[in-house]
Structures are given as structure tokens and as C-alpha cells.
Length: 235
Length: 361
Image: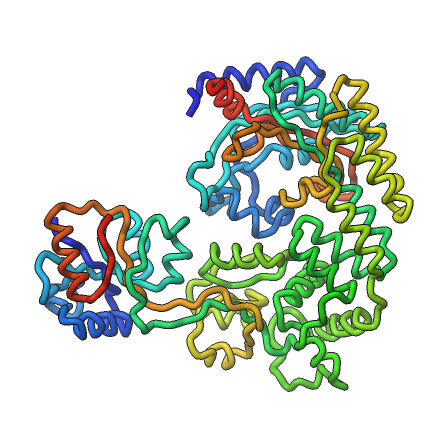
């Protein structure tokens, strides 16, 4: 058994994660071809690199199949109930920043706040005979947020990609999605509600609270955290 | 965790008590079309019920309670008056507290009867109390009908009354609306700016989506009317607050609410019903002198109780959910009845909690 570190397997998130660890003397790299999802860790003993889809890392941490993992705070909070009991946030990595927000068509000049959204949803339901649809992939977070803010008469429709296009395609009336600059929202004629910020997310290094640690794993973890200049005592 | 066999035996006993009281035993399907529940409760139900699906019937919900299927069955084929009892598992999604069960037995008793709702309320409460036996449970009662009547009696626009009624079950939003309508909180800056424009519809944004520009314009008209409407008087807000704060033994609560009714004549009929209920409960041997009444009780449950509400709690066990709950749900029969309606009241007991408390004592 070695200490397993889960890292996103693709794209900018993977590259930036490699850079972040590299800057702290821990070299992560892929082995074999570009297409092979295997990797190595240099600079600290007893740590194995596991390349995974960022969306699966929360589940793997929760199941204890990896000890450490890099993923977005948005994904951890969406996918894990009572997330603080399953994982520990070791360090925000300073990239992959995005806000989870609620957006509606810019042409809804009467809707700027959640209070407006609630009133518009009630009128919409009376007019159209169904609840106002909000497209998202963050079902749990959005539902909790809207419940806490007393918004009723809406329904969530699942959208795993190109969510900003759903309003124009008439499959939703509003969207709840992550955005970093807001450019895609604007290009799709949408605007963010002034009190519609649900969560500020960024790529974060998490430690599983459930993964079993052997004595050797514990040593490897302490070495790695020392090397990364992080303070996260194994419990 | 009590033994399942013990819990089932307890459920069978309760079920027999309800049958003895004249209820017809009914069986309900475990799966129901998700659409019905989603339409009733909205997205919140997804946080509480399990959803599954197949390619033929689409989304199905694993029953989170019996009330909705029992009402549907009654509205489709039931004779009046009717009393039903059932015993079976319900399933509740638990995402934030893993100490709460996600499946447990419920034994229920439901009454569909037009005449004398106060009598039916008392019948259900007294029967549940009797079925619970001599455990020293704390009973709490309330009546959402009184608050609803108080809102209807406010001297203000129909739009405001509708909005307040819609949010009875969301106390935070209700409070925010009441404060705004009373002029206690300022209008949001974005709304002030919108209403200051001569022609807010000349915005130049692309018209996209299902919600039309006519709907946007119609809401701006409503916002203008709202901005011009006189604030709800401080006296009226104080009366609503006083009503919401009523929390004492039933006889004192009744006195208190009757005093409030002098300034809120609209709640008169609801107060009369409370009185009739107290009398009916007394006649059935309920100790009304010590029974708690809380005007806000039931406001944070799911929005289907709209009159009398009650719950039985284990003292010293705040970790446990209520052992029994119930209430009146006339509006639910209206929604599910497709044009028909009938006054209805019911309650459920959780035998697993009863057995657990038994083992503890």
C-alpha cells in the first residue's frame, strides 16, 4: 500500500496542479504516452499518482480509495453530504477559481434579486402551468441555496454542459452554473442575480478522513505535507 | 436500533387500534409518478424523497409518505365519509444527518368528512394519543388556519395577501415580505432604479427564453402598484407578530387569541373553530388544560397542513424526530381532486420510535 494522490487527468487543471506541486519540489508527471492515465511522483517517497476525472475525485476521497486529491470545492460540496466529516481542506491552490451563481435573461429587467426571482417564478407558474426551470448540474447546492432563501415554484432541470445555451433553446428559463469571468453568460444574453452568488470555488487539495493509513503511509503523508509546507496532521 | 420484528408487531397493534376505530385498511404502492409530488411540493421534495426511473414510466418516487396516495385514492373512488388506516414503510433521503433513518414504518389514520371538522380534528388527535398509550410524550398543537385568516384580514392589496399566504411555510421569506410591505425595510436599490425609468422596457437586450416581454412588463406594472400601495399599518404588523408569538397552554392561548380577534375580526371564524375543537377534544377525554398550543407550529413542515396541526415528542430526547404527527390538509384534496375537494385530517405514528422509547424506559 502506498499513499495515493488523486489529480485531475486532463487539461489546464492537471497542468496547473503539476505546476503547483512542482513549485514545492514535488514533481508529478505522466508515464508512457499522452493517452495513458498513469503517473509518477518524484521528490518524496511512497506516494503514488492516480489520474482521475476531477468530478470523480470527491467520491474516491469519500470512499477512502485515495488519501489525497485535488478538485474544486464546488464538486466536493455538491457530491458529498456532510463533506467536512469526509474530507479535510488542506490548501487552496490559487487557480481554477469560479463562482457558482444564478443567472437569468438580461431582458428580464424586472428581476435583479432572489426576491424578484421568487415573485417571477410564481407568476410564471400561473401563466405557463409549470414551474420555472433552472438548468444546472449542481442540484444539491442550488436546491439548498434556494430553499434557504425562500424561493419557491421553480424546478431544476439537469444540464451537464453548455448550460448557458438552455434558455435560448427554451429548455430552461434560468441557469445555475459556475463562471469565472461572466463572458459566456453575457454572450448568451444572461445576467447574474445580485444576491445569487452561492459559492466561491477553487482547486483545492483535500485529504480523505476515511482512507486507512498504514505506518508507512503516515510517514509518507507527513513527508509530503512537510515538503509542501502544509500543516495537516493525520488523525 | 430496535428489532424489526418488534417494530412490526407494534405497527400491527396500532393498525388494529385504528381498524377498531372504524377505519378501512388500505394498501398503497411504494412507487408513484414523480410528477405528482414534484408538482405539489416543488424541488424541495427531491431533497427528501428518493427518485428512480425506467425508460417506460419515467421518473418514479419511492413513497415519502402515505397521505398523497391515500388522498388520490379517495378522490378517485372513495365514498363519503371515509376513514382509512395503513401500515407500511416510507423512505426519506437523509443528506445531512446520518443518524436519521432513511426507511421506517408509519401507521396512519385519515378521516375524510364534510360535517363538523372540529369533531374530526379531535377524533384524530384523541385516537392517536390513545394509541400511543401511557408513554409520557409531550404533545404540541397549532392551527395554521388562524394565521391564514389573519393574512386575509389585513387591510392591504390582494397581491400582498397572496404573496404572504404563499410563504406561510417559509417563515424567513414571510418575515422579509411583511417588513417590506409595512415599510420597515427599504425597497431594494435595483427596484428603485427600475421604477425611476420612464420606459424600462426600452432596454435593448435580446428577447430570449420562454418568459415573454409582456410578462416582464406586467410584473413592472405590479411593482409600480406595489410601490404606490399604502404600507401595512404598524398596528396590523404588531397583531400578526402577537399572534405568531402565542405559545402557551391551550386555555390561555385561546383567551389570548380571542383578545387579538377583537382587533382582527377576520380570524373570528378560525377562533370559533379552535374553541369547538377544544370542546370536542375535552369531550373525548383529552386533557386540554395542559395541552400546548403554538401559533407558529407546523410552519416549517412541508406545505400541506393548512389547519389544525399536532406532534408528539419524547421529552429529554431532542435528537429524536416526533413520534407522531398530523394535521388537517383540506387544500391538498383540492389540488389532487381535479375540481373536487373534501375536508380531511389525519395523523401517523412511527412504531420504531415507540419501541425504542419502550426499550429505554
